[in-house]
Structure formats: C-alpha cells, structure tokens
Image (tube, rainbow, N blue to C red):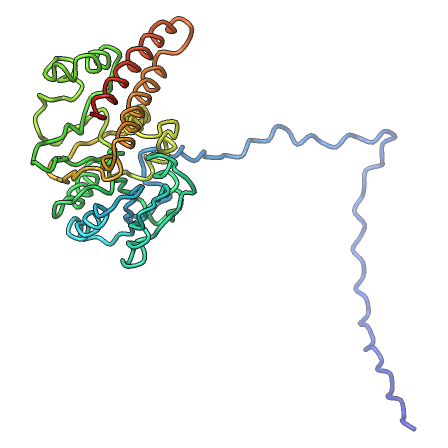
Length: 346
C-alpha cells in the first residue's frame, strides 16, 4: 500500500504592515452629481487618400500581350505571327480571339507556336467584342495590349517604336502606326472625328469625287506624316495602354464591325487620354482574307460599315428634335449601302 505524500504547508505570512491613516472623504450628497461631461471631442484627423488618376498605369505591370481577332484568317495569320518577333525585342504573349473560324488556321497556330493561345469566344462577337473578351483574360501583369488584324505584316522594330512613343507620352491611351497598302500607298489611319457635315459630305461625294473637301478633312489627307495627336486611329493596329482601355470599358460591342475604333478614340479623348499617331512605326495591310474570300462576305461587310456609320452619327443626334436628321441619315446611308453592295457583286 502506498503511503500518501505529506501535503505541503504554505509558508507563514509575514506580519501585516500597519494600515495608513484613512483619507477624509466628503459626505455623500442626497442627489448624486451627474458625471462630468467629457466635452466636445476633436474629430480624428483623417487625411483622405487622393483619388486615383485615370492617367496612371494603376494595377498593371509592364508586360505586353498581342490580341488578334480571327475569323478564318487563312495564311495571313502565319505572316502576321512570323513578323512579330522582328517587331519588338520585348517578350510577349499572343491571344487569338477566335470568332468561329472554320479553316483551322487559329488551331494550327496555337498548337505549333510557343506563346500563342487560342481563345474561343463562343460565337461571332464582332471585332470589338472579340477583342474585349481576349483582353479580359489577361493577367494584371499585362499593362500594354496590341489589338490588331491578323492580315498585317509588322516592319522590323515597329512595335518597339510604338512602345517608345508611349513611354515619352504618358497620356497616350492609344498609339497607332503608319499603315501601308501592299502597293506601298499610305492608308489614312489617323483622322478627325466624323461630324454631321463631314460625314454626309464624305458619304455623298467620297466615291464620285474622292478629292472633295469633306473627305480630305475627314481623312486628314493634307496632314504631314509626322508624330502627332489624332482624334481617332484605325483599329486595325493599335497599341493600347491597358489602364486607358479599361477606363472607358473597352470597345462598344454595339458596333459589330467598323466605327468601333472611331467610337473608342472619341471616348478616350473625352476621358483625358491622347490618340497618338506614330508613323516611325510601320505595318503593311495585306488585305483581309475573311472579307475578300467571296462576294457574300464582302457584301455583308459593306452593309455593316454603313450600319455602323448610322449608329455612330445617330448617337450624336438623339431626341425627338433630331428625328428628321436621323431619318435622312438612315435613308441616305441605306441607299449608299445598296449601291456599294451592288457594285461589289459585279
């Protein structure tokens, strides 16, 4: 049987010190006095954070992505991708926003080339819709986005020229190169916004009188080929500061094709950004495979062009007072579209 351990005893407490004499207390009053008010308290000093400037590359890194919207692009896509490595010394990724190709070209490019991703948009969303969908998939490390047609060939160093212009022009939201046709001619890719007067004059006389003053003004035909601001740039090839693109919510998807670049340039300008034309950067527009493959597609593109032109101008003249103007625009552009489609079908 185990023997219980003795219970330890507490050490004896030292003798208590004599208590201090009591402090006299005031007699309590019959009615208790209210607690003294703390008085007004100073509001905490809060320094508001400055509102984020839309002109900063906020939240994005400095990486580069190239977005091209494809719709059965044929061999032109290979020429586009083959020319990209010579256009810039910077690393980049390519996103093919495919709107329903049936020729297999986007699939082959994504399978055979490093750094090329295929994004199926789920339908024919149009140019702006496809580009928006691709940009939305990019990580925040990407702060620079090229949106370009797949039927372009980049001249050596051209993309680096655009990036250099963006660095020296911090408020540049969109930058566009000089665009040449296959015969060497310069396409008027940096223009004024189409006002009602310029738009009607260009639409009525552009085909029968190419040198008319409205068309010359709209296309800025007499402007010198030098780096400058424009009111809008051709969407066939744009370097976009992603913060700027996001600040205006990208392309307006109501425009299936055509005038989405005009509208984007106008909204960027209103938001405080600049549309910068950089002719030291050059690309060659080889011609759209998807739009020239057959007469039916060409006719549809012509109809879309006139439909988008009406939408753009009608948006600028809303309300009942401008209804007669919109009716006249619809009738005039509808007639012009029918004539253009008929000529294209010959």
